[in-house]
Length: 619
Ligand SMILES: Nc1ncnc2c1ncn2[C@@H]1O[C@H](COP(=O)(O)OP(=O)(O)OP(=O)(O)O)[C@@H](O)[C@H]1O
Image (cartoon, rainbow, N blue to C red):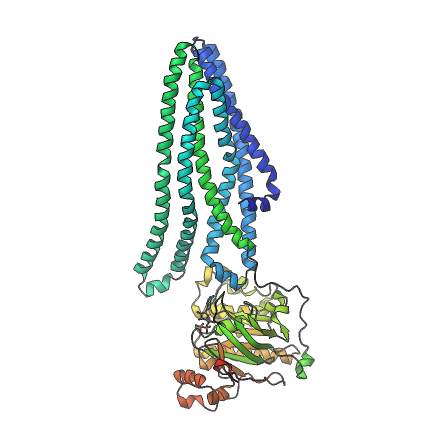
């Protein structure tokens, strides 16, 4: 917590000074009040002098108004500092999360990051506001009241010296037991967040599979789990108030009893006894508030360590800070001297600290303008393989090169402008079609957007929308069908003229005809840019469908994270049993043979070098 305050309190130091200073002045008036009341009783009430009572009454009123003025200033300072600092921490946290590579996002998990940026920062803001408003007030009020009481009468003060440590001890014992529960409560909140998020985002499929009861139970269990911890804390702390008030009231009784005797003997006045009772109440109530502050600060400290954990986590994928990578010239492409568009050499990758590689010694080369098809069973590593090509993850060993330069040497922005991916899950943000299409190029013209929509086979349905490019897109694109969402995300990836386009199973919701038309249009677009003197478009198509990859220049067959086969459709049919098996599971044998000429006619003279590598790494 202190670390966050040190780091983010920069522009708010004055609020941290003025706020507590005002509070101190307010405490001064609070301490003075019992003395004024004592005078009012002794000098006014005791002698039946209404004038004196009114005078002291006016004084008390003025003190209350001035005290309230200080309170208001302090409240304002607390609000400005806590909201300002909270916003600064939240912005920094959000920035840091955006810097994270997929590895860090996997490590923390989205629900936990959401809880940290919302609930945890709220706890910190609450603690900051209460800190400014009350951290000074209650300890000073407690100590001040005790000192004032002892100054009035030392003997009666002994009651303070017994009751205050007694209550302090009870608080200490209870708090020591409660504190460990607070951390648990935050973790349990994370779980509730996770289940809520899964349940709400997957509500359609949950209903389709009649899993409502199961999901309700899962949520109920998580909520009860969290409630159990909260109840345990509640039970422990429930003894605090009764004990405090018991001790306080016993103390008041003792003061009235012993004070009464002293009033009889003339050692004390009635007003002083009343002042004593007020100070006693103030002291013990202060301890209650201090204990509440301890609870708030303990929770905030648990939250602060969760926020710090994210802030201290360095993104594993950072820009090397290099100048931009030079792209091959069209002359180099024409003369066949251009480097490969993509080259992997023994690339290995594993998620987190896993011992087994998810991608194991992947080696392949793809010439500029060529098409790579990636096929394989579910979970064989297709998506992970292509995510290495735009450095969403870093390899453990081996290398990945794009246009002849290691992906680590590329400025990330340039790499991700050159390589454009359409992820497996079509993701659209609320806004308009235009705002979703211009992610890669904010200045794209309408003509460019329509051209991308045409290639993505999306122009027809967008044209039918009354607002066209400005048609609204709801959160997650839920006002579009799965196939329409996929086509819009493909169009988005095409805007800004990428040189390498990766389609990660992103046409799965399209019918076969539209899928074929899409691949044809992408190929034509590559041909056009090459003919116009630009660099040809290189395409990577990840798919479970043989029909989507069979015409690719190179097909990479993935199995258990390894490249089990690499070659054209015909070559693989001849030498990769796994590929043949996949083909036969989707096509009749007579549909397999004598593959048609590739639709993606070579755009460059440089042939794609094929290095088949069988499962287990043997060549
Ligand atoms: N974020 C992750 N953390 C840990 N393991 C993961 C993660 N993402 C994927 N995996 C695992 O890595 C393996 C490869 O996953 P990947 O998504 O690359 O497979 P895929 O071939 O694309 O599958 P599919 O065709 O079903 O999309 C799987 O076993 C999967 O469980």
